[in-house]
Image (cartoon, rainbow, N blue to C red):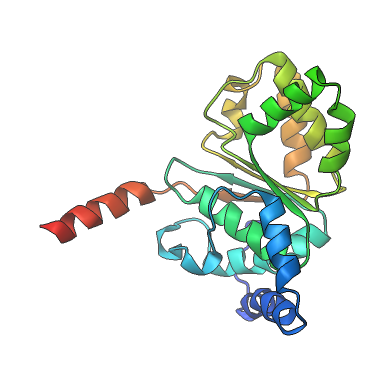
Length: 226
């Protein structure tokens, strides 16, 4: 588990160099293809993120991870924080950086992946879907917190995460502390095993903030109108 905050500024330059290098060798078409295949709901970059809002995670640490060594080392990132902390923004930004660096990325909300797995079972395509997921260097699971998963969904998500353990990277965003994951999944033993696999050699972000970013922006817009 990484809690280091004293990285130098060099990783930021390395991460940006990943983009400029592929630009200079004509790799922009491949970049666009990887980004489209990733299925990000919106385009969010690390450059656009307001790091001053983060109380427990440093900008230097984020840009260190943006160099994508965590993917090369098959490590995970778990972002835990209240709603509006910017978890989805950071996960998409890191995912886009990975696309620029030449990695294959796939974005899902946790519920969408659970539903897609359930549908694949009904259509007798589960093996095909599971095989396709193994081809992604980075799997982003957003919003593991808003809905409760039934036993069948829990088992399928657990299987996907287990298959990636020490083989490929996962980014998970959630607004629930690990001790509350039993609110999402029925089987407590499975929850313990899932957390163990996700947090082994991983980076865990405490992203709790005092005020929602979305609320902050709304209030700022209203203030400008006055």
